[in-house]
Structure formats: structure tokens, C-alpha cells
Image (cartoon, rainbow, N blue to C red; front, top):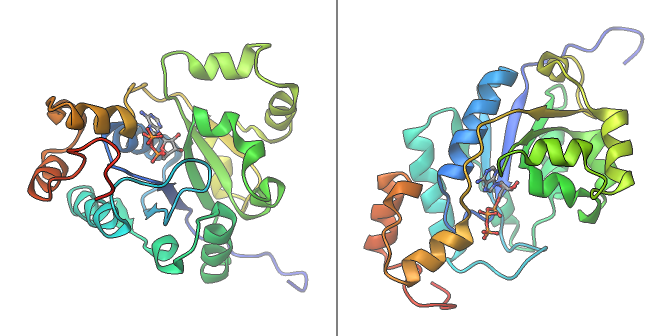
Length: 231
Ligand code: ATP
């Protein structure tokens, strides 16, 4: 960068997950946080096989198809199959390295829920993640942001990380390529994929928790009907 100021482009959001299936708790908090942080493009990246929990129930193909359907409905998202195409267990560090190589002047803003923030020290190569992206944290349960920020039950390492990296102005994320955490005070939506899978297995209605297009896909392909059955 021989003395000249690097031109920073508009940030790109990244939202990765198992999405088994994708649900309203994935969609609305992220849309709300994206609006607060003025991010208008988000790569939706279903992971190949989760490394931090048991394997997905629906195949990569079904989970990617559901992500594609969602992107048609909410065009701020675009489907990014790079994790699935890598064909090996997903580490966010690989996803971010690939996107950083593709978009070297673009701040990458990784959206996560508070539960993921609390577990961040378990992520593969977590320190390096802060050289590659910013994090935007969405509230998952009512008041959980306050608990993370204030409670003594959360570990000291997290408090120190937040002291070092938290920014209050989301526009700071537009001004540097990586390294910050922005906690977006989004409206909590208490739902998870595992709850939805259980409801489907028990024959309960899940329409309140998913876009109807995703529910239709699930019904059409008879996903999640039998407990523990990979589909
Ligand atoms: P499971 O119940 O199978 O563990 P999940 O619902 O937690 O799945 P994932 O696909 O594992 O969904 O989550 C991907 C990302 O979405 C994570 O960063 C997680 O914190 C975030 N997330 C999931 N559900 C919510 C929610 N209701 N509110 C805010 N963030 C969420």
C-alpha cells in the first residue's frame, strides 16, 4: 500500500449456519441488524457439516435449496455455496479467508447470535477471525445481550474481548476492514432449528416460525418427519 490510502468498499454481510432448517429467528434479527448497520448485501452460507455440533439432519442440497428460496424472497441475501462446495467440514476461518481473497477491499461483517458470541473462543483459529472480519451480534433471547455484557457468569475473556473490540457506532464497520464487534440491540425471536425439527417430528404446525415458502419445501420433500432420520 505504498503510502496511498486504501479505498474501502461498502461492507458485505456474511451469515453462516447449519440452517437445518432456516427460520424466522435467522431472518428477522439479521434484517434488523443490517438496517441498523447500513449493510445492503449479505452472503447466506449454509455450512457443509457443522463442526461444533452433530451432523445436520437435512442434506446439504436441501439446506442450500431452502437458502436459495429465502434469497428470492429477501433479495438483500444471496446464496453463497462456498462452504458446501468445499465438501469438507466448515470452519468460518476458511469461509472468511476465501471471501477476503475475493474482496480484499471490502469490510466483511459476520452476523452471529449472542450464543455464538459466547462460544467464540471455541471457534477454530478465533483470533485470526478478527483480522478478517467484524462481528455483528444479534440478540437471541430477551435480555441476553445485557447478560453477556454485564453478568459475572460470563467469562472474563469475553469481557476483555468486548472492551478491546466493541464499537457503539455501526458506521465504524464501514471504515475499517476487520477487527470490531458491534452489538445490535435487535428484537429477540426465541426459536431454533432444533425446536422446529422437534415440532415437525411431532406433527406440530411450524408455520408461525418459518416463511411459508420454506414450510412448503419441507412438506413437499417430507423433511424432518422422523426423529433422527437424515433426509
Ligand atoms: P440448532 O437449533 O440446530 O442448533 P440454530 O437455530 O441455532 O440451530 P444455526 O443454523 O446453528 O441455527 O445458527 C446460525 C446462526 O444463527 C448462529 O450465529 C446463531 O446464533 C444464529 N441464530 C439462530 N437462531 C437465532 C435466533 N432465534 N435469533 C438470533 N440469532 C439466531
